Length: 495
Image (tube, rainbow, N blue to C red):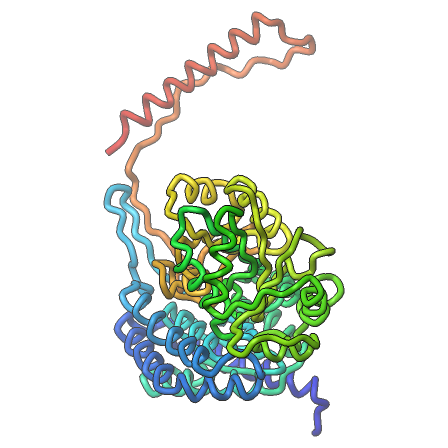
């Protein structure tokens, strides 16, 4: 029987989930030592194939830079492994002796892994590592423009895991991609959780699937430069972060907000690092190319070199330009480049002081980055504290490229390519996702206190007439006496 392509993709998905479920039933019985042996083998495979997978990703998608994708794959292998290798994810993972509680880790089950075109191989390595570390099988749904490289990454991870003792089918990937297949994967009865990294529409679909989901929102990251900052270093960090893999990481800088008193000096250092500032006319042309109506990104320029964007916009830029910078006067639909741009274009704002800078950053976050990240370049701890306490974001990245700080490369955050935005950004998690988000915890609890029923006044017949103020005072006194007796009993019964 010959199936239509969409039916074939759905059947393939069902087969993959069925195989993953069989593998899951076996994997959940593994010991911590067995799991860690598998994870180490996957790490080795990821490192050994980091450059080959990078070349495949660039060739297939046309996005990003080969060298940077090599690092992404290495990061997803080595950095993630080093962070999770000592995690306890099997058996009793914590004993609370004071409260007499054991915490026991259990896998959540088969995971649906949604993979974006911007990070098609590194995301597979990362999600495979954290899934198997927590004893979960995983099935991936690739982006249509990255099917081959995503499938190859999944094949390598599954092969390494199986060679180290994991059951076959523990990592699967859809090869005949369709929207129906992705929906089938997310809603399949044997799918226990969805781990979604991708566009807002796809993440929303994950949360609407009826299954538990971990998804992320957009990251319209402002980089505020305050007068006490090391301006030379700040300029270097911002350009480095923005140009890494041509801006395809959601934690990359999207706008620079600089105090006016240091703006000119900062601009000089930005230019030294390859930033080309656009005129008003050039800004309009670039805006028309980079952004679509409704302030969404044009997929044709995502992860592209400045030269490509300049050619499309019909403008000339100097040789060696690493990113384009557009001075803007506001935030919102009339300023399209004030929104998220996963490419080599930055917005630039001048503000009178840090108070105005704080408000400008808030405007940018409201335009499409609530809950994600904010970079601040400053040596004034009081200003940093104000931003940390008042901005609606869950990653405040200080004096570091936000791209590297956000994913945990230069900071102590969990190394990850799924960065939660919390409820403010429509996400169920506010942290960088790790194996600890992919386990259930059951608890064994012993008694630590005794509870006795206190004497209770006899129930009185209900009166039809309203109670008087005096009756209310008597009732209040009686309630307080009962409360005091309960507290005394509980406190006296602690062991």
